[in-house]
Image (cartoon, rainbow, N blue to C red; front, top):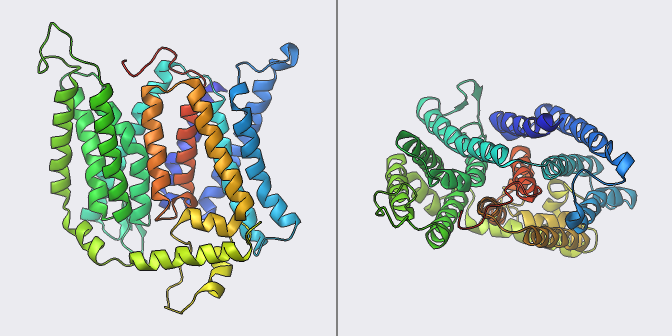
Length: 418
């Protein structure tokens, strides 16, 4: 069961990312069913040895406040349906499935006791996925620009890699990129170090090539934060060796990594990204106007909102002028959450985030936890200008990384100096 709890969520996330980001029901509903079944069996298996001792196999008391907030958040759509506060009950039920599947992934990985070897293996897999998806996306743009994997034809807009939308692809890489950077500066020798640096460079270049404005800003901020943190907390070279001779030299690793990233970004080409900044299909003014629509929706029903998933049904009534543009999402997840869930939902979400950070602080901040938090904060920042939490593959990867960071003492002896 331990092995199933490790590999099944990872397999589900990668499969959904490989088929249009899992945005179609025929893909995400079976995947959700697998996760629900696994969570049920995991709970039964975890509680079985507790029946005699009266305790769980490991201590989870530090996460009680977070679990209560998460359960309250999962009850919100039920209350909206019961009190008839949902403008479209079917969409509210669908949103509940997304939330429940994400919570299942989080609980499965947080409740699992990780060894250091397992965690480093999984971190390496995530890091390699960044380079794999980056390379496949650039090859797809070059060889089959209108087809995903050379087979699935996309009419609406040129896809990027396995994602229909280039912003979704950039958000996927943004979640994996800090782990790719972490692996690139880990102690290694010869060709292995070069491969990991190349892996991070491919991920970085693919986001530049995608011409996603939000993705480029987030990944540059992640890179800057990582380099500053690494320079501040990286171990110093041993006295017996010079900085250029030591395989653990932070200065050499950072200079090489930075130069390779810049080289690959130049090869990928920054002209499409710059053109997208100047003339985008959806301008910044239009994004702000739709965020304003979401805020007006929330102000009209401030307590409960219009029900999760109600944006498409209710937003046209709040448009001040008909521009002919109707978006499936508000392109600002916090504003849309206020419109859908009201002040009650916002209060629960704020309490959830506060409880998560407090519980992590109590557990101690290790290197890998810091890198994962960097990815999570970058994703949240991206959500202010996109609808990344509404893409199943992205939402599941976000909660999987959050659960991984919260897992009990998977690196008990690691500190910033390790």
